[in-house]
Every structure is written in structure tokens, then in C-alpha cells.
Image (tube, rainbow, N blue to C red; front, side):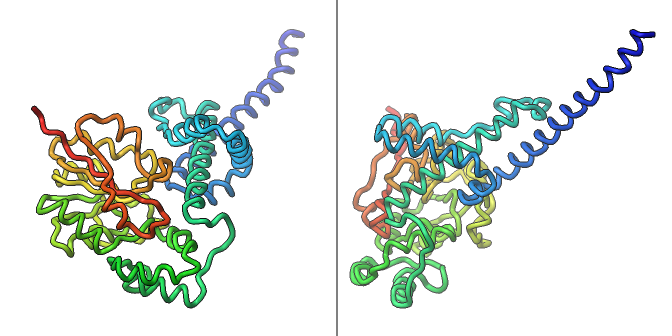
Length: 340
């Protein structure tokens, strides 16, 4: 009886601990699952930092230490690491997403995204000169910018290079432009001369724009007679207002459906996974990238350098026609190599 009594006395305590541990694991796993689902909506840097302040403090301290050492190789390695995205399916079976390992995986992804976006903001600040605080145009600068760059509201127009060279120097608040319009998914402006040059490069070939955003570039090229379809997976709906002319398709689906000869992408996200699919399509003859010279603002440079089917180079004359020049943007053209 004593043995039985001892067991009966001890089991409730053990049972409570087990139940508590199980409950805590369930809460943690549920929280991790919800956080992972939230991450798929591409939260902004501010949203990430506010939702996970402790992780941001850790990332901030790590970045401060790296910048203080001024080691170019270390910074390059950090950029490369921050750009890596893992899917849980690559590491976890569906039945393994209820434990501590998945929770740690999600926290690691939060830190990676905070690091990536902090680095992008650093590079963007270096390009625009805006470090912090709210930014606003005064009345005169706002009127000049509106007249120069937009048809109405925030609908962009092809910018005359002649008009740009005359008006742009008059804006003493020019460094505020990109931080203001970036919030609406505008990463650059296109000159008339750039559109004409791209239209000539494309010719009459079937063209698809991937990650087209609001479809501005496709609209301009179509007005020049280019046979082009704008597509986007709508993953930036919180920032970009997608018109009906932009078909809701991810890059792979767009390439499969339209089988274009030419693909164009303006400001592809850094270290994205969709550009590599372009190099695998036998129908594609030319791929045109408009983006930043900063390798952690736009483009998957690792895939650019790893692919072997296309010869590629920057078209400097077209790069000079992307506005504003402070962005230090470029146009890179990938041309399929001719088989011997």
C-alpha cells in the first residue's frame, strides 16, 4: 500500500509538470506557426522591429559591431547570409513543426529578415542621403516634382531628359523624393529616352514583365508598340496598388503561360528565388534587369554569376537614363549564347 500511495502522491506532481510543459510547447508552437504565416506577408522593417523588439536589439548590436570593424569581407559575408531564405519544408516534416526546433527556426528567420532589411535601409540611406525622421516636400518642391515626374497623383509618366536636366537642379529637397515614394512601391523613374532604348532593344518579340508592381514600365513600353504583358504575384499588396492590367501570376507561372522571348524586371527583390527560373527557360532569348548597383538592394547576383547560358553586361548608356541619378541604378542585359 505504501508503494501504491507513494506512486499516487508523486504522479499528480509529475502529471502537472508534464501537462504544463505540454501546454507551454503548444503555446510556443502555435505562436511560431502564426509568426511564420505572418512572415509570408512580407512585413515591413518597422513592423518586424515593433513586433520583435528583442530580436531587433540583438540584430542592431551585431550590425553596429560589424560596421565598427569596417571589414569589407565580413560585411560581404553578412549580406550574403542575410539574403538566404529557407523554407520550413526543406528542414521540417509536417509533423515536426510543433516543437522547439521549429520555434527556433522561425526566430532565426526573423533575425535574418531584420538584418536584410536593415542593410537595405542602410544602402538606401547612403543613396538618398536621408538617415531618419519624417520627410516631406514643401509646396514649391512638391509642385515641381509633381509636374516633372507624374501625370496625376502618383501615376508616373515617361520623363523628358531635357525637362529633367532643367528642373531637377531646382529641387533643393531632391533627396527626400525616393523615401517618400518608396512607401507606395515606386523604386525609380523612367525617362522617355530609356523607354525608347528598351523598346528598340526588345523589338517585336513577345515580352513578359515579372514582378511588375503597378505595371508602369509595361504601360510605357506598350505605348511604344512593344508586345508586353505585366505580371506580379501580388505579394506587395500592402504597398502597391495593382491595376487590372497586371496579371496575378508568379514568375514561373508567367513564363510557362506566355513562353516569352524577352523577360524584363525592374527592381527585382534582393536575393529573390524567381530570377533563376528565367535562365532555365529555353524560349527566353533576352533578360533585361533594371536595378541598383548595390547588390543587397536588388537582384540575385549569385544566380547572375552562376548561370552559364547567357552572356551579360551593363548597358551604360541606358543606365544613365534611369531617374533620379542619385540612385546609381543600372540596366543589365542577359543575352542567350549561340550554340556552336
